[in-house]
Length: 460
Image (cartoon, rainbow, N blue to C red):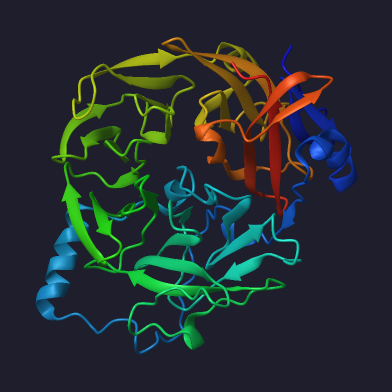
């Protein structure tokens, strides 16, 4: 029987298909539920959610603000004409739609219990749960970094974070005594260091990747080896592959619609570029050729890969059915077929316009979904599924997660990817042998709390 948290309760964790709930957020309750087994408790992080909530009102024109002189020179006549025709062919995305698609607003460090999430219009919060000296999280904010839309840790780099914002990508790196990161010439530590609230080290803005225009970067994803970074703008039909060490970007385009997502496969052999007109392209990254696909159920609102990079699981903006793309041959082959993945339990419980966000654990055993609207009892809950791949994908509903505060809506969530190479630990307890599979993190509940949910279960 799926677990359902009663109104007024808050979810704490999962213990072998049972989603444990309590009356209120409490470190003591979390310690009783999972702290002794894991050796730590993930305390919720408060933040100000107002800047992240969708706004349906057009912004008032700013009449008393002057742009800094160093932003950008006034364009010439030829550039102005070019920009005019570009916007005629590729009109800017509706800002209300921009709030609906699933950008990467939360990211776990692949090797540590260290979390980064978008906590304001122009800032990112970093919380290191393993640093006992860090009493409060660090706040990353600079003049270069405005209108932040996505964040992701760089693989194989220690502590480096990419932040997608207006006009480019800010690259932050942790700095400690005796371990100072290299900074791009022109960026000085005195003008670009973050204020480390309570931390022994500090965060330094080491580079800003800028394209040929000042477009809003709304999606990014690192190649698993950490060398290349894919980025895209919701106001452009092309995406960019950055060689970060060189600071050079190569623009790639196929089709005319603007791009919403660019997730890389775990092996790095494939890249998915999803567009707002319902089309999406799978690119093989050896010769950069692609295969086009299209959907009649809206645009791709979320996408994740299985651990082997052989299956991509997609959600669509106007559908309660998922799609699984199965690659039938090894890379660089683009031969694949699409199969529907039904959600029978949820479809009968929730009256929804479609799936809003999707997250798939790196082990492939847990899936989390949020939905648009829905009836009052299930509105704003997160559905958690057990996933079987044998070889086709089948789902079984585990239950629902409820956030803190009345009517709290999940603004973003994601799984820790630390455990894709195997279990973090095994626990001998009343549950027999269990595996600490993943951490589902709800970033930015609309009530102003950032919560973490350990999932403890027997592995398949």
